[in-house]
Length: 58
Image (cartoon, rainbow, N blue to C red; front, side, top):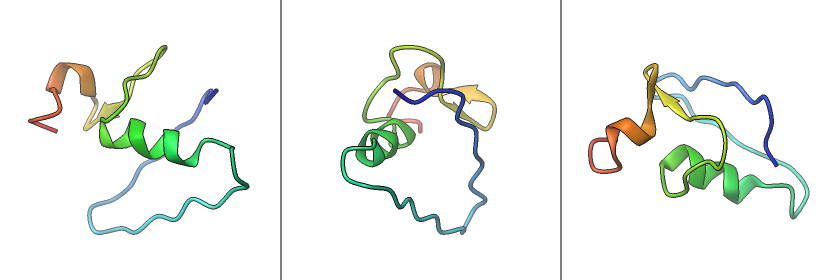
């Protein structure tokens, strides 16, 4: 479960996610990339919910 997570990634910025095995790193990456839809809450890109953009536009 990912709860109350907020972060911003600036254009051209590199980000590393380091955590023990089984803690949700791959799930987080899939959510951010739009490959997995959240069961609750929303993923915003430029203030717009990814579900309204659609994967092709994102």
